[in-house]
Structure formats: structure tokens, C-alpha cells
Length: 315
Image (tube, rainbow, N blue to C red; front, side, top):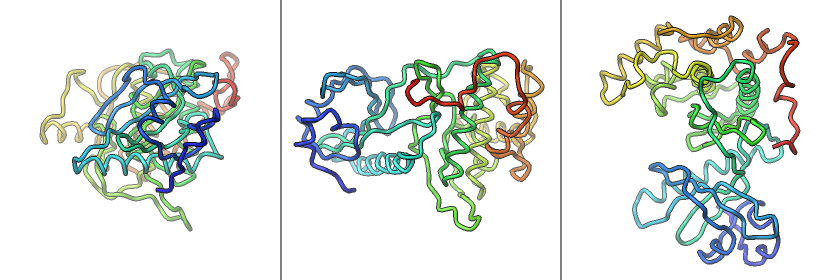
């Protein structure tokens, strides 16, 4: 992990937006004002912060790991660094639906990533005309990642935020992986992790699978939930996955491909989601395939411009 001593850099407004820095705890306190904790997990926490550098006082989000003597700390720091490395490869090749990381900072007490602050989670039970624009942009973002050998591995509504201009942005690359796609090599894995409701059947079983197709499945479940307020294989909103038997019952439902309950959406959107949620991986659409569906490509009389037409200053 190559780092830069930021002692001199802190005299400029760019000190925490460039790349990777090694700071003292006092230098970190001089650089960032921590406002409030906005997320947490076993891996660490996320904070809203303001830069103390320069006159802009711009708001940032910070994903932070507290460094302790516990053995798990080193693994958490490595995971955070891996997340930074993966997203960093997109630095000069960004997509509006993918989070923009600013810097990785390590101090004696903390390791952290600074990134753009996005004010709210994507809502659910959204009217389709608005949701369609989000879906198009997110599919474009996932296709962008997959074309560059990156898979997210944890797509769900909780990992999609909205900018002030309602641009959806995929965040939390803690489970992401990057593959070297040479001569048609596939991004296969046998690892099974993620949130049960969004796991593809093959991932839930731990079968060797194309992780890009698992991303598509998770995105399809996410789209369904944004429209309807629930996932397509959910029989009870209070359903829990606390035992092997619970997971087995849910897997049986997902592997059948049969949606449960009722839903309301256009025939075009249902067609797209059916292709994204095919249990047979070979038959399942890719993100790029989904974008080519007539649902997105045919002209529409009403509605604002596509979010794929991105103005980087508009966020």
C-alpha cells in the first residue's frame, strides 16, 4: 500500500481528494469535521463529514475502520483498501451510476475512504416512469463495470443512493472483485455471500458461477422491489433467514423462477425483469442485453431525458 505523507499537501484544498495518504490522528482531525454516523456494520461505520480545508467546506461521506489490536482489524483494513483499489481503476473512466471515491487515508487509529456525499437511499414503491430512468442508468453502470472485469457482488436497494438531482448511485464495493478478462475468460467464483433475498440461486448454493450474472439477478430483484415494495420471491415481509431450512425454502422459490403474490408494472418492464431473473444462468440476460430491450430503446413521447445522458456537473 503506497501512501503519501500529507503534511505539506494539507495547505491546499485538494489534500483529501487526490489519492492515498498517511496522516497523524491530529492531521485527520484538522482535515475533517465528523458530523454524524450514517451507517455501520461489522466492517466499520460510515460518517457524514465536512472538509476543514479550503473555503468550500464541502460535505463528504467517510467509510471508516477503527484500527485496534484485534486480529480482525487487519482484515477490515485490507478489505477497505481492496474496495479503494477497485473503484480507483475507474478514476478516469467513470459512470454516473457508480460511486466516486476521493482518497484512502490511514492514521495510527483509523483507515478510511473519503467519497462524495449522497443524501438519501433509493425509495421503494416508486412510479414506473421515474423508476425506469433509474433502472436504465443503473443497468448502464453495471454493464460499465462488467465490461471492465468488475463485479459488485452485493447489489440491493440499501446500496443505492440518490444524488440531489435524483441520479442513482451504486455504493459499497466491500464485496467487489476485479477479474482480468483476457480472451473471453469468465469471472467465475464459488463463493456464496450477500443478503439472502438478493442472492441468485447458483450463488446461494455455492455453485461455481459467473458473478456478472449474479449481479444481474440481484439488480433484477432490486428493480422489482423499487417498483412494488417487496422482492419477487417474498411470501411474508417478516420472513427471516435464521436457519438452513429457511434458506432452503427460499432457494426453492428462487430456483423455480416463479414470482409470488401480485405486482403492478408495465408489460415491457416485466419482460426485462423476467429475463434478468431466469434461474438458468445461460438464459439470463446480461446487463448490456437488458439495456438493448425495446423497453429502453423504443422512443417515448413523455418523460424527462434519459439519465444515461449525463452531465458531470449536474450532481
